[in-house]
Length: 218
Image 1: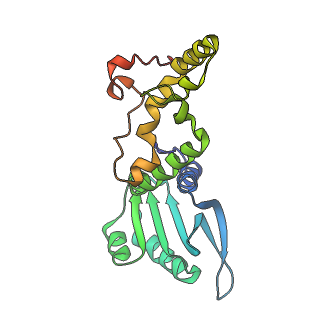
Image 2 (image 1 turned 45 degrees about the vertical axis):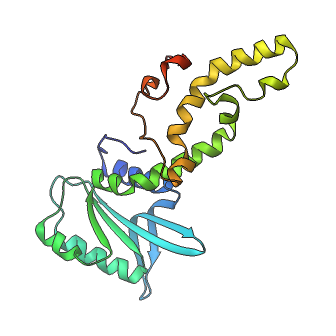
Image 3 (image 1 turned 180 degrees about the vertical axis):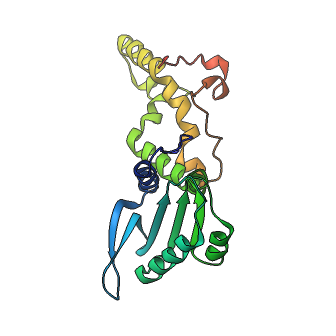
């Protein structure tokens, strides 16, 4: 969901924020209502929770798709909601920016004031990490069969027709094995990840020419 497109409406902004947090591995919902200890409820644009090693954290997001900078009274109100809800982290996400008073009001608090682009930047590494693990689970062990440095198991096939059939399939899907290392969560975890390829993916910068990898046009 990380994108260069600006959400055109407040609904689109809320949904984009929710989707990013959800794809980061959090349980995120829009238009949530939180019961306050002194009675009543607070309406939250986006509420996200995450439990890591048995520890639950709560994140609240206020989305302002305004054409003007967000003033300080919005921050003051949000600070009250944050405190009464017992939230751990809060974001006010603005279409254009914030007034100086708002920046001052959020200083030394657990609230960050961000544009949508900055919000995406803040969560980019977490988002990439979650998405690469999701990709790894989806393809499972496909790299075992389509890795670009050999044809695993070819020596176990005794029938020449089967060997030729296996080779044709391996050649057809070799581009997958060439792409996958760039998205490997294991290499990222070890600090050995290669830079993510840009879109559209150009394998000329990923594998050596002698592999002659054939990539589908789509």
